[in-house]
Length: 371
Ligand code: SF4
Image (cartoon, helix red, strand yellow):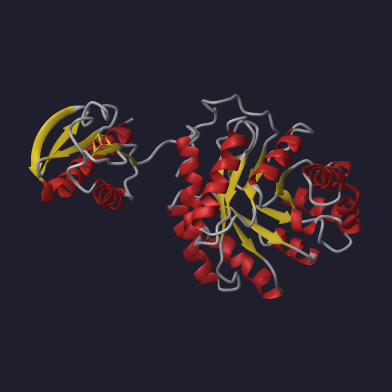
């Protein structure tokens, strides 16, 4: 998953300043990156590295690991040394782990100033250590850990309260001359989340890390993330995204990549166009679409495959597809770029489509490699 598109077809992107998370640029017109977080115990270096490898395969650009204990902090150098992705250490409560993460060579550290003890005192030395190491930070403000004073002043974790908290922390960094940080202001409710990021985006040029926190299981969380990220990205707001799901992290990456692909913000991979089927359908479109999607899910080339339930809206409707099938009469018309190339019996539809799809994908990859 190389993020490769920096302009949005929907809206000019907000001008943000650029920071680096290891080799990955965030903000300043850089392609929008996808992040996730491992859910293995960080101390289990092998399991964590295995998961990071899986995330990288799925298109993840940046990975975050939690550092809740001394043992986890001690595991960071080994993880950083072998990780194919830049590693962000996620630290709550204990500022000493921040320094350890910086020493371990982490690409960035996420701190939640709202719950780091005596942040006012330790903040400047964190900035100094980050500057000396040439790494960036993320300020992560969450509705759940909003500063008590702000909570009382605004009557809850409102967009204004979350932004006030982020601004206060950003100012603290900037007062000591530190600018290499991005901000997240997460909320579990998509509407509040969108309002919060919009407000924050109007206050300065920090790169923004988008997230709907505690978004729920895959189905609900995917919808919430699509809505909230879609609304913001369609306005040009957002420099890096993390989908949070109560599901394996690789699912977060898949959803994040697809959001960017469908918004024209990342090179498309395999895509399926399939009809919803109706009373005219002469084949089980739902099952067919599922089998084709499963069979092609690992294809990297940007091909579109259409699965149509009947010939009424067959090749014509799906002319933009590279390849497709329109079914009828126990047979499938296989078409390439709108032209029927062969007709096969129903039980040959899936294998024939997969064969052609792989051929097209191989050719595209060869052409790509030649360029
Ligand atoms: Fe119905 Fe045919 Fe359209 Fe599918 S392609 S929705 S089966 S009319």
